[in-house]
Length: 586
Image 1 (cartoon, rainbow, N blue to C red):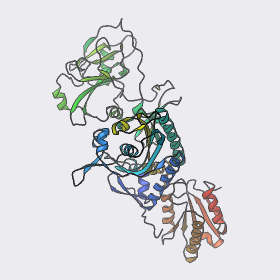
Image 2: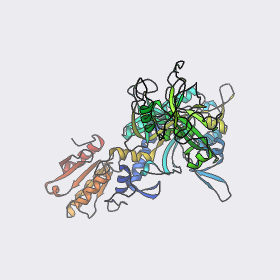
Image 3: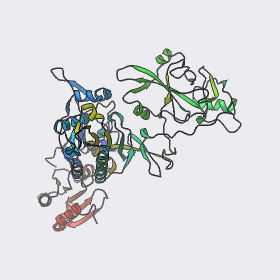
Image 4: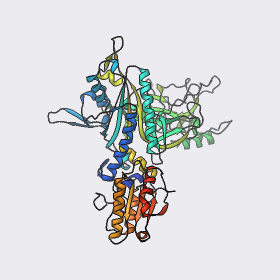
């Protein structure tokens, strides 16, 4: 410790939002270099490499071969695939001194595709699995939470190349199994959920989410086993409703009712139903947003959904990607005078109606459903407006919020909402990149066929934070043994040469036995050493101090807090047994 490049902090960093960020900085594992960019100090880098090793072992076990591609990449392959534009502002673009376009790699599908194209030409060369562990770059608009949302991060990305879809499924399943083993070894609770493919493309994808209250992702799960990222939940449309006996639509004055709540209260007071009270679910809310295209142009979009739901901005963003949604401003309303703010109805919406604004409705808005909605006049609403009779939409959009208790799309029970952190994402890419970049091989009949691909990512640096998040306590970090920078931290806490010599001899014997040891030989008080040991989080610590006069040392377990006095002459054997055989002290 007297030589280790580390400085523990007694106060939380000002920008720390989550426990992992707080403790990794305070324990001297990472230091902020810029927003979303961190330096790895020796302790943190050891943890990072330990996680990399776990990933390597499981990837090698399925026959995947490690390569190492550059982080600075030419623009042309990404222009050919379309992602130079599709990524929008999320990638770092730069020019060299000759004016050539480059980017800092966010992911490497294009480069691995070209690498295989350059070297392989026959079905006999396939299947092929390649991976690398490389620094990635994404220009996050709002980097936050330490290592959980960075601009520079370390990721393992691997790629499978197969001759047909049957081979792709086998490669996908092999990677899926490898990921289960990786995350089981890392030791945090996780779920596997259906996910959106987004700009990556492909026919299917799944995410591995670490269950965490501080997670940015919301996922759903049902008692029957359905699980999905909330963006990937698809509402099953109800059956059409007969409307032969539905009354004609009728307009009522509804002054001062620009919100769903005020509308429902007014309706129950002035236009009561005979069968039951009006609720927000009886109303049709029409929300207008501006969609910004990648070329900078903007066009309005109207979304109709039941009034008891809000538009989920993450679901909307995933649906519109790579385009982005923006708020509809007062200036936008001024440019579209047919829209009565607070009282917008389907009457003016639609590409063929007065506003010319494209109108998409929630899947629940099916033929025959009756609604209370805006009458396109300030202070007025229309009642018993029937979908399919009185209005139609230009299409369907599934972006309403998912609520606790909603039915699972597969009928497996009510949905439960929870939070998670994306730790892995696997994709069946298909032929998107192979077609764009011309990756073809000769099949067994001598015919050129396009290779089918899979892509598989693990957030390696993010895993450091996720493990810390799941294992830390009110005292500091608490690493699982396979990930910890050291197996044992030895604290020399007494005065005099005898204590330091005994601690040093013990450290040397353990080191000779292959045990990773951190010796706290500093001239600091026992209280400082104890506090630092708890913050740093090594799984086992040994205190050499006042008990030495009786031939005893303390063996401490960081996770359980158990303390045992053991004879010094038995310490090496006992510590080796703990490190190699038992996770805690008996």
